[in-house]
Image 1 (tube, one colour):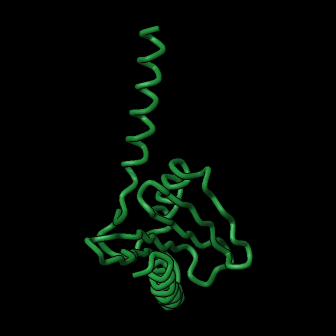
Image 2 (cartoon, rainbow, N blue to C red):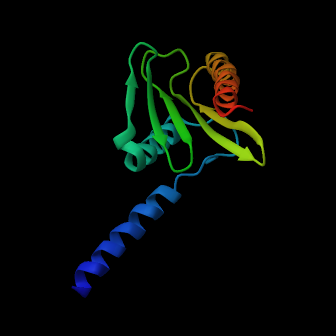
Length: 136
């Protein structure tokens, strides 16, 4: 019985530390290498693979971490900004709600800038909808 309890606890600790190992801002600048993109994609997929959604029409693969209200959108081959990703996390400080967004690219910077701006516009619409829903 003790061995079973120990194994369950060890699995939970390992799963938790795997999740905690995903840094929101893993690199000091938004310009990265393709190897860094692949490494981060692998980390996110290992941690949140069950939530994976392929948005073929947008050439994106999206993962969600419900515990931290964080989403990760990775470009696929054929996307103008590939390889790149955008990470967004909903943050509430007191009664203020906002989206913390970060992005990285190893491909075309101008295409990445367009993608980043598109997500920023979506962020505001999302926050406005959440405020309406909560009555604020």
